Length: 235
Image 1 (cartoon, one colour):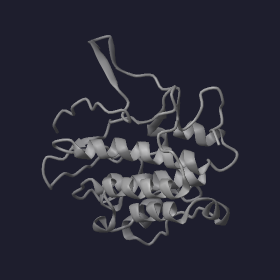
Image 2 (cartoon, one colour):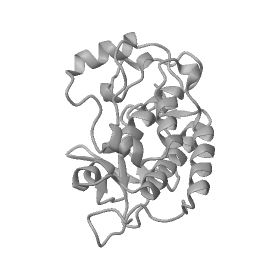
Image 3 (cartoon, helix red, strand yellow):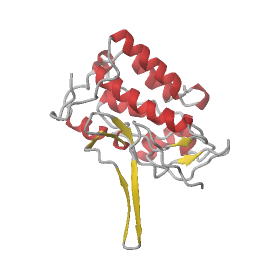
């Protein structure tokens, strides 16, 4: 396994340095006060559409950067707990413990990050590519819009078997959330978590769709995802 480069992008948590003294091993990253998971746990109502669009775009930009590296970097553990928010309301992808460099078309992993977010090919231990991260991004979008972790009432082993065999339906947002969020956005979620890799979009296509949705709704994607003086998201 090759050593990963330190990625530098506004939507990737910045690596600051490391200490390799035998009794004080540590890695230093920029400080971000909370994760998207923290945010979801605080929110009693659906996250407003503008904020969902901004967070979705910022995460997609970070992932697009990773996938555009030479060679591409696969994250392989994308979920709400691994997306942080800094003091300025910028979403940043973190935790590269399972990340791989895609040197060729035969990248495989026997390490499983978070099975409830993992693509079928990851769960099967097969060859993987950027589309594995796209699948996890679709589940991340479900978290953003539903406010819940996926498959929360189903045993993990049953989820793994169901996703591998394509016998388990993807989690439902529920009628209230389906009506609250734009149909184009919920379709992005469904396109990303398609069972077959070839049917999933790439992050550049996802970004194009998010920009079109934002333009249609009059949402400025440059705004912060939240304000630091409030535990709730801005409306």
